[in-house]
Image (tube, rainbow, N blue to C red; front, top):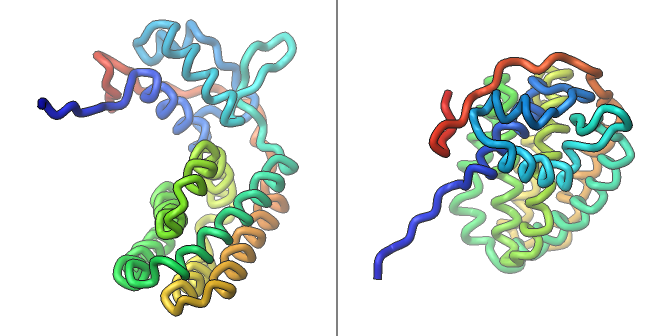
Length: 237
């Protein structure tokens, strides 16, 4: 039988394009999202724009505003706190299960992620730091062997990215202590110390949440900047 390959749908690409602009601040909090304008800017019809905005609304990045239609959601400290409470529980469980089930893979593959993360922190590049952080936490979730953990977390990664981007830009980079925490979690997993792995993971997420809630404030309204166009189902630089 012929192998069927999949590629991102046009809606997925529009979601990625809009979310990237929200995460990086090109579309700040409060920016109006007018479907006709977005369709022209990206070179697509209204239908994928409408579907993408519906998805982004579900992710918490877009909301309705009386008299303004859809806007980029302000970052809500209460929502961030609630979201990170759930994440702390899930990732604590993931670390525990990883220590019980996957110490060998953790020992084999984990150190490279720590090295990459420390290099990303030294680079000062915000998106590189976010990608390294997400790679580490996704790795631990995979090690757990429980697919529901990652499936539960995955819809919120866009919001996590936005929160991290906002904070890293304000603090001008990720502290080395973040990767000290990651290394401690990995070490506990490699030692099969499930209790310690869970404790360290939960403390790490809770500490991050406290920092985000203290520092994050909405940026306020701003004018959207030129966007990448979408043509023939492909993103153009």
